[in-house]
Image (cartoon, rainbow, N blue to C red; front, side, top):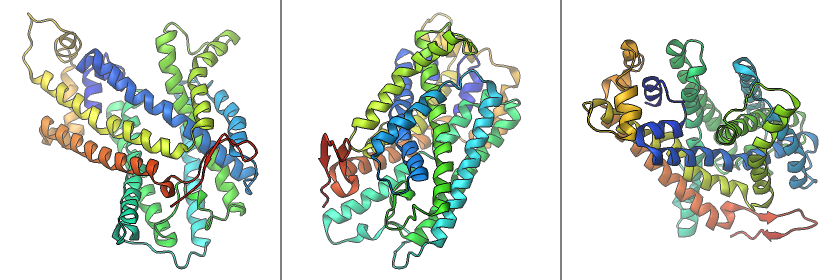
Length: 419
């Protein structure tokens, strides 16, 4: 759906806010910017924390050093990675392949470590968890919340597929290669989530932490395999942070310095790009240090952005897009949307634009309004699950875990009680 809109609206950048502006008008741009850039801003502090945990796990498996100090050290590396702009598609492809290779190594090492761990007595179920069937209401409520939090984790699996569409114009042969990229992205997601997830749960049971490497009673943090895993995990997460920060910095550059040349590697150009990326970096660093529970914040971020970015907003855009495309051209009426979609982009499409229907049999076989309604409904269901899990994670001490600001020597706030 998203790709069809991008292909038809050739003058539009493959971004939510630009599509929103062309199809829904100015308020569509604002909505798209809020959910997409808001997702980037609120994910970056979590990425900093995960980078710090991975780096600490590699150098200091005992974890004696306060993670806030590690965040401050790792954040410097992450800030420097923001300079990976203007390197061209080949450099981005190289970083992507490095990230993919690191993820593959992490997955392989994770399976090996889990297989070598003695986890007798851990229980797993074909569906759900044992707390869902408890006679106690609070425990049963907590069990359903864990199911919803698991669903919120899998909701992020749509993001790589979504990014495949955004990057489709960067492909050398977008018409031929887009379908391959989409299938590869979806296949890797399903393979990792289902294959690795089912194996881990069967071996370690359903009650494991997220990330898995923080399951203290089972994870052998001091083993060589674990430390190697932490190293590759750090590299992959650092690249993920770099790509996220680059997207946010590019948005700032487009708004504040639209005439800036991203290929300018002079001292002044590097300094300009550095200061353009500094606001997002500082927000991420401050949030990483002062938010008491970053994973609780991630649960809220997921509910407020992920289903909207991946399902609800694209479904609304596609419904309006299809409706405007079917509507007769009105020469005597002028509006923002007529100028951007009905009277320009859609009437000036290339004669061979129908290739997308041949490449996408689902869109060709299903009526646009039905397809949009299905995707919209899925988004609403995902939002409901994410919102329920996030609200319980905020309210339940056991789900939220220890909440603290600062380090053991100078706690500014601490609340480690659990039910």
